[in-house]
Length: 478
Image: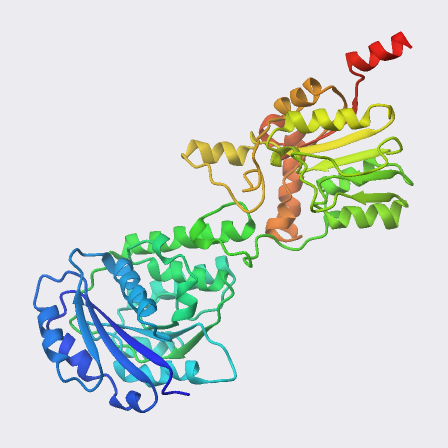
């Protein structure tokens, strides 16, 4: 089994002529007894003899080896992309990243590769951590400011991303190549925060990370990292990851279907739009739910109010047709998150009005996010207009409305608005149903009433259709 596991030892090198031969010599030969081992030295356009020395040293090496040189410097992240592409194209199972400056001990490779050889569990990444035994990191020469910075940044990132890593900033990593093929690595930065982005991608895609302790070594190697810029980039990237998980931000490099985007909080545990809809519907009513976006709402109407709820079948394309339903007997039509997702909201409402002709007592409850919400305005102020998995700028939204444009749409479509409700943002879905979320809702509620165009997150309208001139004429003629 182990012989069939093809392992690529990827040595990233830049101006490493003093250390590259030593790093190669320190790779344990016993690896060849367990794995099909290959070595790739990837020189990132060094200005010294790194490539020539590595190429010569690999002649007659104990395992197959190759030295390549990027014609143009790709950066730390860009060099990894090239190496991982090589691993994927050459059919390797595992790729182990080693630095050419000797900071990370090649002697640890057998230990870091061992989890991939186990048959009883699947591992996607193994990180050699210097911080599992923190005192050893200081004994190994890690500067104190780097030690403190490492701990603070890692704690900050763990808190934001919901992870429990001892270190986000190790450069000693082993990846399963099949997992790397599934990640959009080409979208990642070429800079040093590439390591944070790939961690987020592994976590968001449901990958499993294992940490193992490694010794710390700091010698006379040249550090090419701008510490302050690196810390800033890492914090911004991690904050973006948090917003993505809250469902208020979107970035294709972190888009995975299994990514958790909102907390599972019941619609009726806080003053939500679904709860407001339920309060507006009379007990025992016949309700057609065109959006089918909230299972809690349908269940509540059935169990608590004795309503009959007809859900729109998933195979009905609302841009072209409406579902079969007893239109002449309906008491309510609920259309939450429906108007925003239509190719033409005007055509949809025209078809709906036509179907409702003859049922003067039916009430349409329609809701739409308010694109004028202050968060969206702040984003625009800073030049951002980022679509997300959920929320006002959800990827499924094709139309955007303000409270006035939504009311005008309804009026032009032949519906008379009976009641308006300005809803606050569903903070518990992003933050959990905790004190902070409840406090934000309490602050948002009066502001939404006072300045709805700025602080209302969603607009909820109750409306009834008005008779068309054609129907009035027909009745007059009769």
